[in-house]
Length: 174
Image (cartoon, rainbow, N blue to C red; front, top):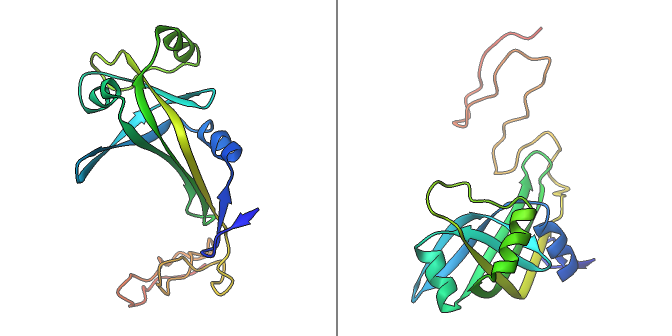
């Protein structure tokens, strides 16, 4: 396990690809000069290629031009204070007809209405992943992150947690 100074596990390419295969929604980032558009897509992994259906517009224009794009997926568990993030950078192109059949066989289809039947492929040139390592040893397990002093609600208590303003709530306990 390769650790970054910030308490993050650096993921290798195989783990990045494994994690990519565990989710179906990602975000494609397309640069327009000094601006970027970050757009959600429903995707599948075919080998190491990311594929998604789209219609006319920004994503299809990027594929027609063979532009470099970034693609990101993540998953976080707020209660467990853990999660991961994977970033892919690669060329975005229109996929061949043979790849359309493979994507459909995997159950990939667009969720959004409209004419979204063009398959786009991102071929990774660069993979980067990070896993958040749990553990703030100074923080008791019943305290949320974020600097508040609110304790986690106790299932035996009928009193609500104190508001963020710091005044304690009143209530009865059983």
